[in-house]
Every structure is written in structure tokens, then in C-alpha cells.
Image (cartoon, rainbow, N blue to C red; front, side, top):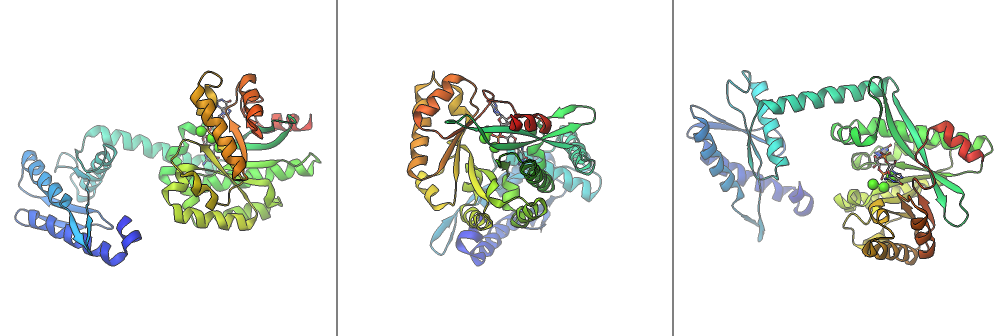
Length: 381
Ligand code: C2E
Ligand code: CA
Ligand code: CA
Ligand code: CA
């Protein structure tokens, strides 16, 4: 994919052909080779014991890794190999392939460019994941998700000026489940897309309902994960959430992480401009934990940096964290961005932030994320 994106499809195709040719040379005497889509191949080795297989596959891996020169550019390919053996790891072609697939993912997890053998624990892990995924899907249909809201506070006036919507799963037997326990799986399985749509719509409805009650309008911040951000229909989803709720776009802010932006820089910038056109605001969440070049920030239509809570946690004891925090704040000011600190738990931290010129804060010091009704009361006071 990387080659296709940067050098064009014809180079990508040539590269794949050369690599496939090398694998073919090493399989033709005792096995067969098939391409099962994209950059995945199946190798069937017959009449061979495990040791023989490992030996052969190592040779294949080395052959694949030999550099390829195309258009004067030296390219290197790595491969991850998963092994399943007949009949112990599957008696049908489908089962055998599924086992080999699990082993291949294990090889990738272990750092790519490696070989992993299927084990029965892999099925147990996969089975657990599948049933949790199924539960998540059901939870969406059964309306088991709820949003909690955490206030974002103006450091000068002490007033609530925004709320971050944070999703929780009201699990029928496990009680309240926090995002740390299900967002990653939702992301992996794509369920984050419908879940994210629900979050966006619910948060916009809520913000509009507060305004309709005559409360002073506040901004609503919604987290958007990498997968959601890559979906083309995000723009449509956001537009729909705004029309259906009647919320003015200027009150909606999307929080995206630095690493998400860097993953696909060109795509992200395009997406950001589309969102800006809708009138929606963009904040960089967990700022300082990624590797974005600071000058790149100027190219993005951003309105806010959200200083990651890890920098705030050890203030005032960690001089480095204090230096980084105040550097981020002055950087934000120079770039004409708003800046908010998250995870503010103590008065000392809040004082340091005020002294450093930070605009806003969010954290347990003011309030934990609370249920809708509690947040209503906080707004009314
Ligand atoms: P995040 O966006 O960095 O959200 C802030 C997290 O820090 C929240 O955890 C919040 O409860 C917690 N927090 C707030 N103030 C403090 C504090 O003073 N001290 C400490 N120690 N923690 C504080 P939560 O609600 O468990 O959410 C965890 C993560 O899950 C979020 O991190 C966000 O990345 C993700 N998440 C939550 N809701 C959604 C959602 O609707 N969609 C997506 N895609 N991700 C979500
Ligand atoms: Ca966030
Ligand atoms: Ca954050
Ligand atoms: Ca965080």
C-alpha cells in the first residue's frame, strides 16, 4: 500500500510480482502457492513435517526480504507468516486457513517479519473477542450506551464553557463499563463507526436541549477515533447530527489525537478542511504524546490543543513536565490556538496553568465526568 501511495500502482504491482516469483521458486517442487487478495498469499506444503516447513518458510522469508530495485529505488518487503498444520489445526480448508490467519496476526503482533505457529490458545482468545464483539453489537441495538459529561472550565472566570462527552456501556450484568475496556475492540471491528454516530447525535441533541432550556450555550466536545476519522461518511454523519439536533456547528468540537493525524497526514488535512467548512471546531487531544512537528500544526485548521494529562499529573514536582506544559501553552498562543489542560486534579496545577497563560482546564479538581442529570444541575447553578 505504501508503495502504491508513494510510487504508483504499476510499481506496486511489479514489486508484488517479483516477490511472488521468489516464493513460487521455493514452493513449486513440493507445494502450491495462491494469492488470496491484497498482499496475502497461501502456501500449501505437502508431505512435510513441521521442521521441514519451518526450514522452507524461513528460506521464503529471506527470499522475500532481499531488496528489489525498481526505477533506481531500492525497496524492501517484510512478511509475516502464520503456520497451521493438517489435520490438528483444522480438518477443512476453511478451518485451516482461519488458523493460519490467526497465527499470522500473532506474527504481526510479535513485531512483523516473523513466523508464528498456530496454538489452541489463539482460538480461545479469538472466541472471546468474537463473543465480546457480538455483545457490543447487541448493546448498540439495545441502547445500552450512555454518555457522561465532564465540564471544561474557563480558568479566569471559573465558569463551565464546554462539556466533553464520554461514552460508557451500561452492561446488563457487569454494570458500568468504561471506554478503556471496549473502545479498542470497537475500533478493531469497525463497530466504532455506528457507535460514534450514536455518540455524535446524542451529544448534539443534548447540547441543543441545554440551549433550549435557556441555559447559557456551551461547546460540546466529542472524541473521534482513527477509524471514524478515516471513514468518508464522517462528514455526512457530522452534518446529519447537526441538522437533526438543530445545533449550530460552532458549538461542536471534535477531539482527534495527534497520532491519528500523523497516520495519514494528507488524508487528515483534507478531512479537517471539510469539517472546518461545516463550521465545526477541531481540537488535538492528548497533545504532546505524539511526534507531530510543531510547524506542521500551522497547516491544520485547528482551534485548540489539549495538553495530555501525563504532563499535568506531576506538576508541581516534575520540572521537565512544567517546562513542557508552559512551552505548549506559549506555542499555542503564538499559533493563535486555544489551549486546554486535561487531568487537572489539584489547586497547585490549576494555579500553575493560570500563571502560564492557559485558557481552560478539565479534570477531577472541578468535576469528574457525570451523568446527564448531574451535569444539568451543574449548568443551572
Ligand atoms: P480522553 O479523550 O483522553 O478522555 C479523558 C479521560 O480522562 C476520560 O476517561 C476521563 O474520565 C479521564 N479524566 C478526566 N479528568 C481526569 C483527571 O483529573 N484525572 C484522571 N486521572 N483522569 C481524568 P474515560 O472516560 O475513561 O475515557 C477514556 C478514553 O476513551 C478517552 O480518553 C477517549 O480516548 C476514549 N473515549 C471516551 N469516549 C469516547 C467516544 O465517545 N468515542 C471515542 N472514539 N472514544 C472515546
Ligand atoms: Ca478526549
Ligand atoms: Ca485526552
Ligand atoms: Ca488521554
